[in-house]
Image (cartoon, rainbow, N blue to C red; front, side, top):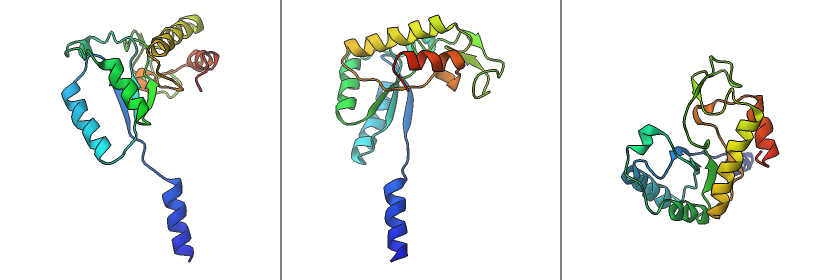
Length: 159
């Protein structure tokens, strides 16, 4: 009886989080379609990190998906979680491992004033709002945050 209880407890309280970053109008959409088909086949509901105003030069090399926002709304209707993944995905500051998690590397948010970070978040949230996409999740490109990032997120209603 205990084994069955433990099995049910573990099954009910564990899972696997699958997260996709760098979802943008310009990206490798044929590869994403293969991933989407696999997720749907196995009824997996991932977290999709969407860049609201993609300016990343590497991603801009890919063809633009004309149905991008329709696709994002469709994913949300399937129960997939849509997260805001930065604003423009352009890294313009070096963290020198002084970011919150001490990962280091380049950042879009770290080192910017509270006002600048809040402005980026508000602009990004407005794009999602205009597209009728609800956002409750945020993760910064390259996982680089500073205290201003967390204050800005809270002031924008993202936890």
